[in-house]
Length: 339
Ligand code: DAH
Image (cartoon, rainbow, N blue to C red; front, side, top):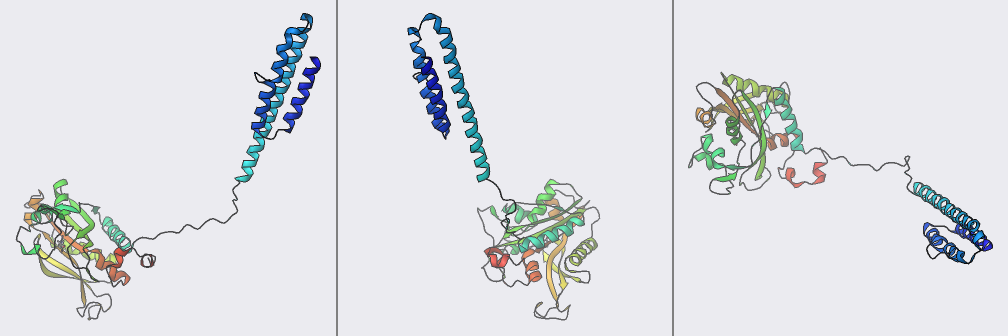
């Protein structure tokens, strides 16, 4: 039996030495140390051994078990280390390899100019306001002093959603929403999308962008309107640009005007860019109509204000020499990548 134990020890050591993976080691563990394993089988024969021999043999058997267990533990550790080392080599990151170039996008031309315009007004102390694009007839027309059957409604081909709900045709409804929510002094611009059922061509799109402006405080006059918008135009187009105010009519302002800037190319002489006019219209503006102030909950006996509205697309088209408004919405990379 002593011999048998010795033999199992040696064979176990040899076979474990040859094992190359964790599964093989587990198999050998079961073979030698498992319930039906060889060592266990030997111990079961202990009954046939002389009583005085038993303690000695028991000790030897335990030693053999310990010896084999130790080999298994060492072997397991060795294999795990090897596996880890292997993994580290395989997954090694070559920090000297050249990186993949990440292509940077660019701002949309409308965003480039809008950001510039926002910065100019923020610099003058304006906040940015927003309103919904799906708007009530009340805010888009009614509260702006454009009642039903008013001719101004005809000039704005409106997308109606229901009889009382529509896609806003202008950013002017934001004026009312701001007045309803904030007490004067008010100094905001409200850029955003507007919608009109125009036939699409090189200068018309059913979706375009406007920037609304509203200033309300005690004692605001037409001089403030002119000074503010002159500073704006000079900031956008250069210190030497000139503006002129031309009388006009809007239902929500009184008096109203349109603001022209002297043609950038001919400086007033007349050329194809300004269609021979010498001047280019860029803004509608005026003193906020007392009824509109009232509709916004502002007392026209205490406060006065001015408002203005401009189209963004036309400004951007002139800036970058873009001759077709549809290019803004096509998302053609050949166009967008130029900015
Ligand atoms: N809402 C006008 C339009 O779409 C533009 C406009 C003109 C806005 C004069 C104003 C303003 O605030 O005072 O044609």
